[in-house]
Every structure is written in C-alpha cells, then in structure tokens.
Image 1 (spheres, helix red, strand yellow):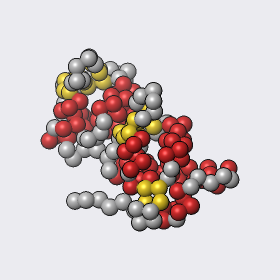
Image 2: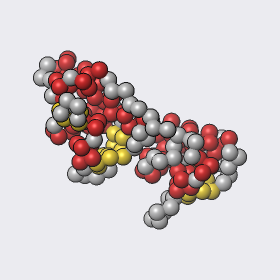
Image 3: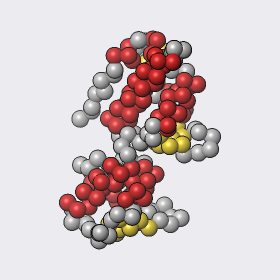
Length: 179
C-alpha cells in the first residue's frame, strides 16, 4: 500500500522556494524546510541521499508550481540539518549524506527491542540479515542505510551490544547483556 505525503502549506507558495533575507523569517523558513525534509525522509524510509538526488527530488522541486529550491539554498538547508544533528556528510566534498530522522540511540533501541522480542539475545547476525531478513520486514529499520544502523549500534555498543566490524561488506553483531 503506497503512503501519500501531506505537503506543508508553505510548499504551495513560490516564496517558500526562495530563502528570505529577513533573519527571523529565514529562521522560520529553515525550520519549516528541516521539518519537511525529516518528515518526507521518514515516510519514504530514506536515510541517505546525494545532493544531486536532492536537487531533482520532489522534496525540493514543486512540479505543480514549477518552482525549485536553488542548489545554494539546498546546501543551506542541509547545513541547518547538520547543525541540528540530523545530517552527517559522508564525504569531504559534501556530495552525499545520511539523513537522520531518528537519532542513533532510537534506532539502537528499536533493534534491541526486536532482538529481545525475537529471542535472539546472544546471537550473531549480519547487518544484511538485520535489514533484509523476512523476520524483520515488519520492523522500522529494514531498508535503512548500513551507515545509519552502524551509528546506532556503535552508540549502544557500551551498553548491551557487541559490534564486530571488519573490512568485509558484512558486519556481524552480537547482542548480549552487559549490565
């Protein structure tokens, strides 16, 4: 079943696609853009993107109005998300990024809850299994970027998860209690 996205009222106005010069207005506008990006990515379970993809996305491109947020303004919105802790650049050129519509500790908690519910404590499995196994298909974390889940697992590592990383594509994780 396809989910529809309810665009905020500002998205229907061309002025939303031009960053405003007034400082107060601009702050409200950036807050609205940040909220829109996080809501859109949450609904579509999108956790990584390139700047090029963002520029062509419906997110920054209102086809009905034939207005789009300019590339420089998109960079400003992305930088605002980074300052708030919702974005992490994946490269030095700032051409691709993780969008964190959930904090790493929230993802870690969801994973730990699934592990506990499914009786997989003290088990070892890969991130691939975690995100692509039919046992997890009804959970909130399948489809997330590996980098997002690794950040979540690293956050919880000292509490109750042992995370084993290597240079291989598969990352193993073992969930145990360390209380």
